[in-house]
Structure formats: C-alpha cells, structure tokens
Length: 420
Image (cartoon, rainbow, N blue to C red; front, side):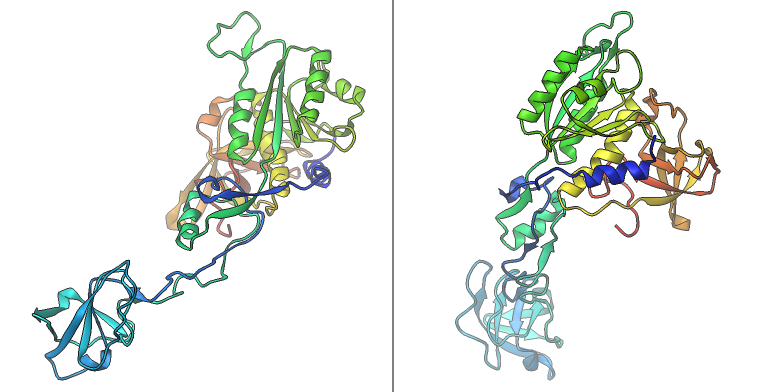
C-alpha cells in the first residue's frame, strides 16, 4: 500500500498522452466549460460617455454661481441615438435620457428632479461638479482587459460581463470523455425493480453519471457487468476504441474470488500503476493506464462512499489538470460535533457539515455519524469532506482540520476558503 500523496503524484504524472483539443463555443453554450485561452474585452464598457440618469447635460461653469441660472435647452438626447451633432456653448443645455450619449462640451448631468422649466428655459438652483452623473467610456472595462484567465470555469455570472462587451464566442477545452462501468452479480440497475434475496440497487453508477457532467465531463455509460471477466474485457476494449480519456470502473478491485478487474487489465497489457492505498474509505483503489499509452483507468471500490471519495480526491484533480486549472486548496475549519477518528498511517476522509460562526469569523466542520463506507445516510446531511491526515489517530473538538466541499470550489455554492 502507498500513501494518498504518493498515489496522487503518480496519477498527475500519468496525465493523458495528448492535451485536450480546444473549440470555440457560442456564449450561451459556455457555462460549465473551461477557458482554453484568456478572454479579453474587444470594446470598452462603457463604450461611450453617457448619462447615468434622466436630466440635463450642462457645462458646470455655466451653473457655478448667480442662482437661479437659466439655460436654453437645445433639444433631447435619447438613448440609442448618436450624440447630438451640435455641442454646448455658454448658456445652453441638452435634455438627456439615461444611457444617451453626452453632447460635446457637457461635463455634468443635472437630474431632472433638481430643475424647473418654462418652455425651453431651464432653471438651475445649485451648482454641479464635473463628472456628475456621467458614465465615462472605459470606466468599467477597458479594451484589451483580461476578463477571464485560461483555466477559468465559466459560470452564468460571467456571461453578464462577457455579453456586455460583445463576446460572441469563447475558446474552451473539449469535454473530457469518461467511460463508466459498474460490476457486480448482486447489482440491480433498474431502481423500480423489486430486489431479490442478496441483491442491492446500483447507487454508484447513477452518482457518477450525475456528477461527471457537473465536473465538465462527457459521460459514456457501459452498464453493469455481472462478474463476467470476458464481458468486462470487451467493455474495456470498447471504451478505448470509443476514445475515452478516462475509464471509471466500480467494484471487483479487492482481494475476493470474484474481484477480477486487475486480472483482466493485466491480460490486456494495461500498466498497473498502483493498487491499494493507506486511506479510508477507498483502500482497494486501483489505478492503471490502458495499453499503447491509452486512457487512464480508475478501479474504484464498490462501496458507495469509497466510490464518491475516489472520484472527489483522485478523478477531480486529474480533470482540473487536463483543463489547465490550478490545484485546489482546502479550507481550514475547527472540528465540531464529535472528534475525528482515524488510524495512524492512514488518511481518513470524513463526511462533515460545514457551518460558520460569523461573529468570530470561524468555520466549523461538524463530523457526522455513520462514517463506514457502505453508509449513505450521512451524505444527506454532509456538505463535504473533512480530511484527517496520516499523523493523527484522533483530532479533538476545536482542533483544525482540512475541509473540501463535495464540489470543487469553482463549482461549489457554499462557503469557500478566503483566498479562493
């Protein structure tokens, strides 16, 4: 058995043989994708000087003293039209609508509520400062400014700024293609089917098929193999032929008589890079590369929490690396609820619920009951994983512990580390 850190280093060093291709997608299709190159603004925001409210465009020098001051209105400047061709001279003003271009010569806009009018004569009773109520060209975003860096996962919130400066398409990485295979004679895929003696429902397959698209991957499902090595080997070959970047298999990686995954991999000349780790859940995890520098292979243990943990702490880092994203940083929280129980020499990933103590600017990770790898009820309450490192057999309430949300921080909608 090797340590978690050793295993992760091996995985990241065994990156897929070729980098993901890039493609240009329409802005509406960009959320969830990862930028392959920096997105720069092609125009400024604002694109021109315009009024921040309905009012009158003036020269501030004309209304600096001698109140009340009367100016002659030259007409209306309306949003959607070009700036008036006639600029302001002394004693003149333009009525202006919100968003309309500011006429030449004007250096402030006085709100309509602050003036009185008699025909074309507009009466001002207070001075204005230069720049009042004017949105300057480039005040928000300047042309050429980097809006999103390469490696940024695009969210709907990003679209607001990108659309503002007319970004129609974005260069993104191709979605990594991941093949998913379940194993087990006892596993029932049809959730509406009544279980017979000795059967269980397939929970890891639906979980992986739901999580992987959220993580930015394209999923190819190869169904469930009923402890049939020949059929399993056929699915591995099919996944390679289909161009999968990664193959995720659940179950049949331990040491039992029906744990055939390693034998089938070796028969196909896959290179076993490690098998079994000093971690829980997920001790029997197997990692390999398919022959001829083919797809990366993860043999995840079949227990639900072992599968979920393997996905979060091994597959997610690979997906981030493939798409040019930085390594993820954990939050630090104080243990709450009950001590974190582990075993010296093993890394433990514990389901926890994060909560904040705003008055003290502190995060707490409540360690939940039901930590065995077959137990799923705690997943209903948990928000992520608390990590107890190999040097600790127990960490008590109030001690610091690393915390990772169920989704990486660029996808998680909960509390983020302060530096993210």
